[in-house]
Amino acid sequence: MSSVPDLDNLPERLTPEAFRERFGEVEHETLDFKRGVPGDILATIPAMAMTHGGLIVHGVDDQRRIVGCPLSQNTQDRITRFAMECGVDVRVRALQVGERELTVTAVPEVRGRIVTTPNGRLLRRVGADSQPLRGDALARFVGAHQQGSGEEEPVVGFGPAAVSLDSLNGALNADDRPPVVRRQVARALEDLGVARRPRGGGRPDLLRSAVILFAARPSDFIPGARAQLVRREGTGPGPGPSVDREECAGPLASIVDCCEQFIHRHTRRYEVVTGLRRQNLPEYPAPVVREAILNALAHRDYSLSGATVDITIWDDRLEVKSPGPLPGHITKENMRDEHYSRNPRIMRVLKALGLVEEYGDGVDRMFTEMEIRLMEPPLFITTADSVTVTLRNRFLVSVEDQVWLSLIRQPDLTVAERRTLVAVRHQGAVSPRHLRKLLPGEDVKALLAGAVAKGLLVRFGERGGSRYELSDEIVLRAGSQSIESFRRKRQTLLDAMDRRGSISTVEGAALLGESVAAVRQMLKELMRSGAVGGRGRTRGRRYFRL
Picture 1 (cartoon, helix red, strand yellow):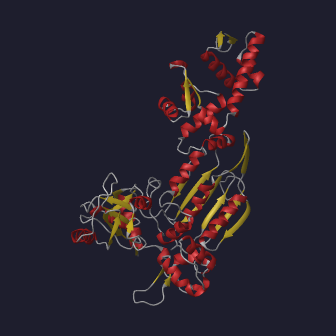
Picture 2 (tube, helix red, strand yellow):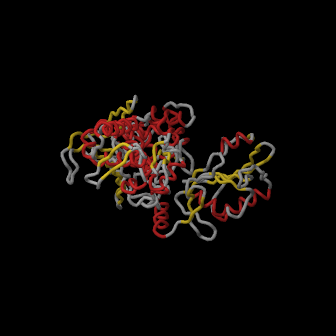
């Protein structure tokens, strides 16, 4: 099967502004800009063909200036010759942008056979680069391409009468197509790429992908086209007693919703009050749960027709198991950066439905969302028969701190930066020495310098006496309840010194109801600020006002 990016919907003329709005200025897997028709498209064409296909826009230079590349006979011949050397059928057309003519080459995605460069290299698009496959990844990719996909197989006995019109029309609406009635179903499925007309003509074959996406009862035709869910008590090992079970069946989008509802019923939700805000936080980040379900259903091996997606909820974790090994050249090591779809027809429909945002971003998003909540990263266990992702509900900080961090609304923070902010939130300020104990192995000097540069922290003092507090911007975004609490406690210690003359860390801990270690840190900060002095050794030291 091959699919060609649709050039027919591209206008003949665009203003420069409309061109930039449509194409953007950033190259990616399915878009490449060229000033003319250079020889390096001998790499771009096969790399796109072995990924998702794409568009090469000729007449835009490296600074993204529109310089023009008219579709002359020489341009046409040069592109066609390069494409023939790679064995790829491309489409070429002219595009007028302002006063300049550009040329657009549409490269199809090619499956079922291998496309290489003329010198035999097998390339894949990774971002804006065309990168070679080597070793085991190369062998697995070739094997997957030669075997084809289970979604490609026609299904005997499946016809328009078995299609859920609601699901089909929902997909058509998302793809900006008009709704259909029963007699128009076959053509609509063909338009969505899940039906294929035989070479000799006649009625289109409805493929397994059409059953999975749009059959009212997919398991009537593919026994494993469903998900089995169970809530078990305890943490194992062993199966453990089950509390509840459910089977989710129907069109794929309905299965996703059903799975989410079951998980919602059987996982906790935390209600936290931060300042004047009341927040509800799920036990597992909702985007991560949804991505795990979608990955299991969209990337599973549907040639294993009797195997189901299995989801198990334990007290300490959530497991999602998908039939079949990792697809193509994907490994546990490259899955955050690389992408290969075992079922591209299904993925294209899911993208049109808005269930999938961008190809290849899903796994990376799962890791990022878990990092944002300061939770353990997803654990992937892969075998020759299945892929299991495990989400654990262990947190590095409290749920209240997670809510507080979410109020900062800065998703690009590292785990170390988040933990630093939480430490400052509770202690009022941190020193480099304290952070080295909290984050062993971390480059604390670079961490603090970066946090100051980002406007997260403000530095006070010099060298050995330096301390770091939350910036006014962070306090404004997330509130300062804990900072104010810290300041009140610090003032309580100062007032006690005024009344008693001096206090010890043990007396301060009893006074505040805090640990001795926390009070010792407060008193050290007061000493560094010059407000307090100390006499005696560590255990017997007493602190007094200066």
